[in-house]
Length: 337
Image (cartoon, rainbow, N blue to C red):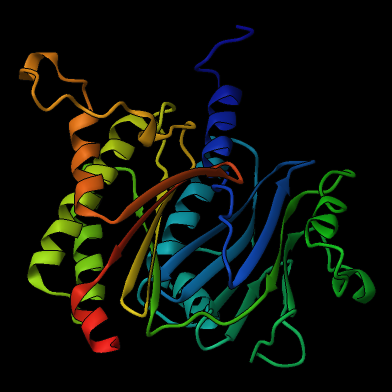
């Protein structure tokens, strides 16, 4: 039946849609552009995530076949790559572990792993795929890296090294009767491990506790006192709970990115999500003298966030909600003085 939402074609289309990654957030260390398309009997995708606080993993994959089995295989490969990279440290190790566990026939995979603090990259590929890192794995500012799986190919050297932007070579290979996936990455500068960390969590309530534990460990390393830790915990829990409860309307799994930095005792936390545009600071301040039934829903929680922190600001950046939380850490301020 035409238009049947449970037809194989409709289900394959939904699975393809679920493979699309979130927009890469604006970051000081790297820029990333990617794309995928299928001109024949294939399912292609690209992915990026942070398996550790200083490690970025990027993949480009093409799976032979265009039916439900192929689409399910693609989604399984994506999740298995992520699971393996949470345990190993290089792209080569990850693909060896993947090949030992599944049949890789009909798979074209390019994988790149970068430690943005050490400035070190590793790449590996299987099937009709490749990774271009350059003449050395130690990265310098301005280095360009390329992943391609399927029929995309590697850009000409002049185009690849162009400073005009990394989106152009990606767009040039999408379509044109080809199938596969590509990613271009610009390495801008090294991160600072001692003072910065970044990680992502899922958009579930169970992930909020995991985020709180990671934030607490980072702050403990910087000598933050228990009273301040508790206040930051409460504020972050309120922010993340609001994001999980109200930020996503499509019912799909999403990632929420948290970036933390400490500079001269000044803590900055950025909470980024690609949900619907929403400025929580637009919620009216509550009337604390009113009875509970009359108070604005949500206003009390954000009131506590503002009270516990020194500054809270919001912006919509590159398709992401970005909520910035700032606080001067007393213990660190005393050490810095």
